[in-house]
Image (cartoon, rainbow, N blue to C red):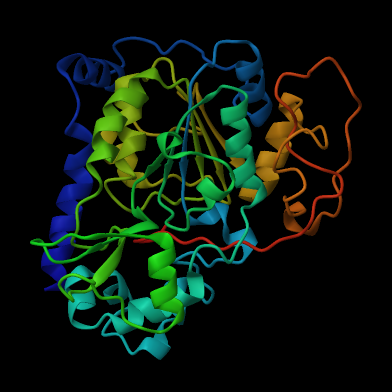
Length: 375
C-alpha cells in the first residue's frame, strides 16, 4: 500500500509543473536547457544586498511570498520534520498506525479523536505572529506584495494584518469549517469550532450530526480551486519570488517554484531565506536546468540567504531602509528576533513612505505555526 502511495506521489511530483505551461514557456525552457541563448543578468550581485538594490531600483513591482512552517517556529510552533522536535516525532501519545495518519481524511473519519486533541494544543488564537509575518505585511503596506502563498494553517498571516485577498492558504485554514457529509456541507466559523475543541467535544454538525472538520487540506483531499486559478494569474507578473520557511517537499505547492522558473526564467528573481542552500535535486531533474540555481557558473538570478527566517527578514528590512521604529502597526507586537534584545532605532531620514518594521520596545511573544504535509 505504501509503495502505491509513493508511486502516485512521485508521479504527481514529476507531472505537476508541466500542467500549466503554454508552448512558448516550453520553448524557452528547452532553449535554455540546450544553451541556445543566454540569460540576461538580473542582479548586480547574487546576495541579499543585490536583491535589496533590485527592489530599490524600481524594477521590482510584484513580490510573491511562498512560506511554510519555518516562518513560525521561532514563535513556538513545531514544524513537521525536524528530528526530535518536529510534529511527526512527537505523536506517540496518539497511538497512530503511522504519524501521517493524523492528517489523512479516511483515518480522520474513523478516528477523529487524535486530530482534535492535537488541534487543541495548536489552535489558532493562542499565539502571536513572528517578525517574518510582519515583514510580509510590510511588503503589502509598501505596495509590493502580489500574493502570499502559505502552507500554514494557523491563520497568523491574517493576525499580522493580511486579508483574504492577499493570501492563498494552499493547505487550507482553521478560519472556517464544514460538515464532511457531501449532502450537507454546513459551514461553521472559527468561534464555533474553538468552542467545540476546547470543550473536548468531537465537533458534529448541528443539522445532520456528521463530523465537522476545519477547512484544512488533509492527505487525500484536493487543494482549494483558488490555489490553481490564482497561480496562473500571479506568477507571470512576479518580479521577485521570496521563499521562506519551507523545504519544498510537498506537491503541488513545491511545483510553484519550478513552474515560475519555466514561465519567466529571464526576469524573475528568486530569493530563498533558508538554513541550507542545498536545493531539492528533483528541481534540476524536472526542470532540465529550469529550477533554482544558487551557485553554478550559470547562476544569474537565484539567491540563497542562509539564516533563520526572522534574522533574514531583519537584515532585508535594514538593507531596504525599513527598520525605523514605531512606524507600523506590528511594531509593538513583534518579538525580538532570536533573543537579540531590543532593536536599535535608525536615524530619521527622508524615507517616510509607509513605515518601518520594528519597534525598539517590541514585546516578546510566542507564536505557533504548522503546515499539513511537512514544510
